Length: 345
Ligand SMILES: NC(=O)c1ccc[n+]([C@@H]2O[C@H](COP(=O)([O-])OP(=O)(O)OC[C@H]3O[C@@H](n4cnc5c(N)ncnc54)[C@H](O)[C@@H]3O)[C@@H](O)[C@H]2O)c1
Image (cartoon, rainbow, N blue to C red; front, side, top):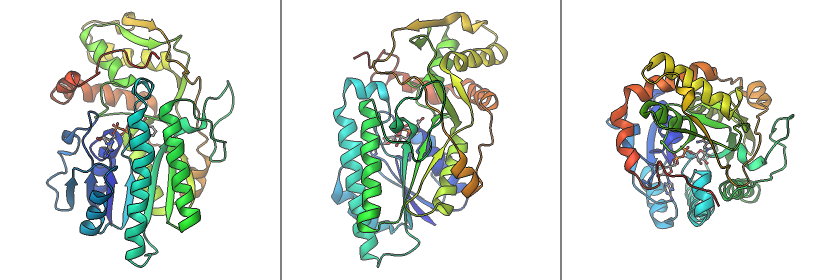
């Protein structure tokens, strides 16, 4: 299959690109290369015969039309987005432009191409979204695919809007879509402004490890390579017009996650141990959702998919990867905003 993957130079998109190429698919990686992108993420596959790269902004409809006409993909996997909640608090404009208007453009470009091609039955538009669209949970309960939307940050509101557009393009125009909403990803090639790499790199440099609020916020943690595998499964086997929640079956409080990373650091990089002594509680993010949890029943029962990695194992692999790949992360620390406290409102 030839898959047009948007956001393929980002964290999750690049994992999907690498896995799709490994599985023998052809890939057109479409990415405008924002601050969050890195072509080094796909260096291992960029010479593969089935790989092509297009530096294109999804807000540019003409460029999208050209890419569809030139590459004639069998499927689209849409991951391009502004993705950092703290940045959405400081500057929501880019989130509205890319996540909402950009998705609208991509849907229209895909619809026009699909119509021109005679509405091929096998065509798929797979929209990748987040569990944050469902809002915040109390102590109990989990998000199912039927949980009402209740986004509370500019980021999650923009993703929720994009989900609604994708559903509407299916219901109104019959565009063959599948949708997924996943929990917090972590793993290799994670941009060093998100919690897991921040903790590893602060611990490594002996600097304070910032934990928002009381550290009691709960997230479900999904290893990025498991996520890539789930996404390709949904693309191939998912039912049209249906959404699937994807979780790691690993719920953890932020503070416990941070302590687990510190324990792996003590073991793999004993210099500076115990690294947990560096943990420092800082002012909470405004509107910080307390708890997210995923009910993975649908993807498990309908598509037979489950995560392969526990959070314990995934974090260990991630710490090992950062310790072995300083050449990858060191230059990223110079990018705009990295290492600074963002999103304090
Ligand atoms: N990281 C997570 O934990 C998580 C969880 C749930 C859902 N998601 C969703 O998964 C997708 C990928 O997330 P990620 O963590 O890999 O994000 P990321 O920020 O690492 O990568 C996003 C990529 O999109 C590209 N991009 C941004 N704006 C663009 C535009 N206008 N045109 C073309 N390309 C553009 C960037 O250059 C970057 O390569 C996003 O849609 C995000 O909402 C992420």
